[in-house]
Amino acid sequence: MQSLLGLVCILGVCASETADAETSIATLLRGGKTGTTGTTPEPMNFQEAEMIEGLKEDLAAALERFYQSYFGEYGPTRKYLNVVTSASPFVVQAASMAFWAYDLEYFENRWGSDDWAGGWKVVQKYINTTSKSIAPGMDVVALFRRGNECVLSFAGTTGLADWTTNLNIKSLQNLEECGLRNVHEGFFEDFVQFMLGDAWSDEMEPEILSKCGGRLSVTGHSQGGTLAEIFATCINRVDNVTLPDLWRWGQLVHSGRMVSTRVTVTGLYGVASPGCTVDYQLENALPGGIFPGVRFFNMDSESFDPVPWITVVLNFQHAKYQTIQLPNPFKGQDLVKHEGWTYDARWQPLTSAVFGKSISLDHHLGPEYLRRILAFTREVSVTIVAGQNFSQECLLGGMNPYIEVQVGEEEHYFTAKVNAGLLDAAYWNESFVLTTYEPGTSIQLSAWNDCTKDFKMGSAVLPSAEFDPQGFAGWLSLDTGAELEILVQIEHSQF
Ligand SMILES: *[C@@H]1O[C@H](CO)[C@@H](O)[C@H](O)[C@H]1NC(C)=O
Ligand SMILES: *[C@@H]1O[C@H](CO)[C@@H](O)[C@H](O)[C@H]1NC(C)=O
Ligand SMILES: *[C@@H]1O[C@H](CO)[C@@H](O)[C@H](O)[C@H]1NC(C)=O
Ligand SMILES: *[C@@H]1O[C@H](CO)[C@@H](O)[C@H](O)[C@H]1NC(C)=O
Image (cartoon, rainbow, N blue to C red; front, side, top):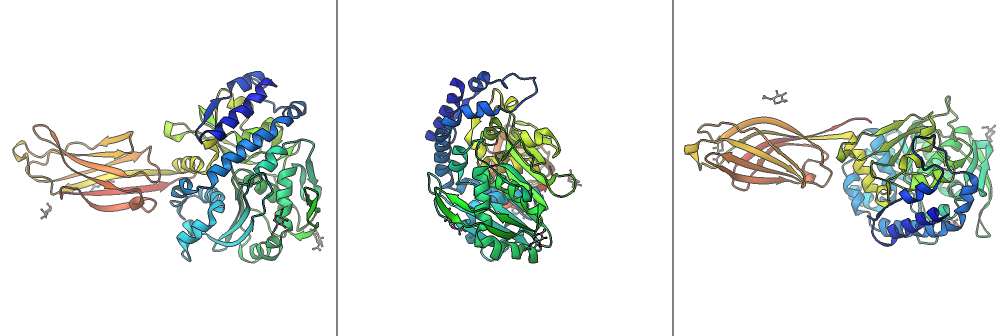
C-alpha cells in the first residue's frame, strides 16, 4: 500500500512541475510481487487492483492536468508531422494520423485544398466539445482519405479522467454480439457514444463503404488507440450491431439502437495506448484472430511511458496485434518487436520490464513518439561533393581544403584533406550518415584549409526546411563567396 501511494505521488510531481519530471519507481516496484526480475511476470491480481481504487482520482487528476497543459500547445509535434510524406512507410503515416486528429485546424490551414502531408485529406470529422471529464476538452474522430484508401483516427485527450477514475474491475462491459467482453467501461462508453452519433451513421459509414475501396485502417494515440482496438474488433465481426442506451451521470445521452457496421478494418495502429479488456482477448474476426498493424510504446534502458503500463498493473490487456517497443535510437538502442500472437504483444510493457526505470510523462507525448518512429524509419545522409572559389590566401602553402559538417551540438564530421595544389577548387564526394539529426535541426558546414596552419575559409547553414523531407542537391554559397556542392538524401525503411 505504501508503495502504491508512491506512484500517485510520483505522477503528481510530474504533472505539477514540468513535462520533464522523472522519478524512479524502483521503490514502488520493490514492494510488489512482480518486482523480482527473472521470474515469469504476472499482472497484478484483482485484489491488488481493488487496493488502489481509492487512489485513482489523484492519479487521474495528475494525468489530466498534464494533458491539459500539454495539448494546449501542439507546436512541438508539428515539426515531426510536417515531414511525413507519401514516401514514408504506411506505418509512419498511420502513427502520424493518430496525432493529426488533435490538430485538425492547423493541418487544414497549412495544407488548404492541397494534398495533405502524405496525400491524405480529412473527409469527415466527428467533434464533440461537450465536457464530460473534470477538465474541458473534446472528443475528435477524423476520417482521412487518400485515393481509395481510408484511415479513421481517434484522438485521445479527454476522457482521460474518465478512464483513470474508472480503472475498476467492477465496471466491465460486454457486447458479445460483436466480440466485446470485459471491456473497460470508460472506453466502452466513448465507443458507444461515437457509434450512436449521427456522424457515424449518416456520414462516415456510407463514405467508407462507397469510397475507401475496402481499405480502412484505424489509428489513435493513448485512449484513442484503445478505442481503435474496440472499434476494429466490433466492426469486423458483424454488419450491424445493436448498441445499448448510453447514460452519463444519471442522464440518458443517447438511446440505444441498431447501427450499420458493414465496413471492415484492414489495419490497426495504436500509439501509447492503455489496455482495454480483463481476462479476454479481443480478436480479429478474420482467420487467425490477429489484426494487421502495430501498437507502439516508448521504453528505453532508463525510462518509460507510464500510460500503457498503468492498465497492465490492473490486468487490462490489448487486442492481438504486433507490438513494437521504441527505445532510444539516439543512444544506439534497437527496437523490440512482439508478434501479434504472443503474450508479450498483448501485455507489454510488463512490470518486470519497467523495473528500475523512471516514469517519464514526456515519453507519452507526440514529439517523443514521432521522433523515435522517424529515427527508426529514416536515414538522413549528407554528401560533400565539391567546392570552388575558396580564398586565394595561403597559396604558397598550397590548398588543402576540407569540410566540417556539424549537426546540433554533438555530431561532427570532417572530410579528408584534398591536396588541391594551386587550384582553388576541390572534389570530395564523401558521405556521412547523420545519427542525431531530427526535423528542425540545421546542418552547418564550414570550409577549412590546412596550409601553414588550419584556418576557416567560410561557412554556411542549411536549414532543416530546405532539405527535409524532400532532400537537397545543389550549390550553397559560403559567407565568403566560395561555394560548396552538397547532397542531402533521406531514405525510408520499414520497421
Ligand atoms: C456530445 O456529448 C454529450 C455528452 O456526452 C452528448 O449529450 C451529445 O449528444 C454528444 N453529441 C454528439 C454529436 O454526439
Ligand atoms: C444485421 O446483420 C445480420 C447478420 O450480419 C443480418 O442477418 C440482418 O439482416 C441485419 N439486419 C439488418 C436490419 O440489416
Ligand atoms: C568560381 O570557380 C569556377 C570554377 O573554378 C570559375 O569558373 C569561376 O569563374 C569562379 N567564380 C568566381 C566569381 O571567382
Ligand atoms: C561518389 O560516391 C558515390 C558513393 O560513394 C559513388 O557511387 C559515385 O560513383 C561517386 N561519384 C563520382 C563521380 O566519383
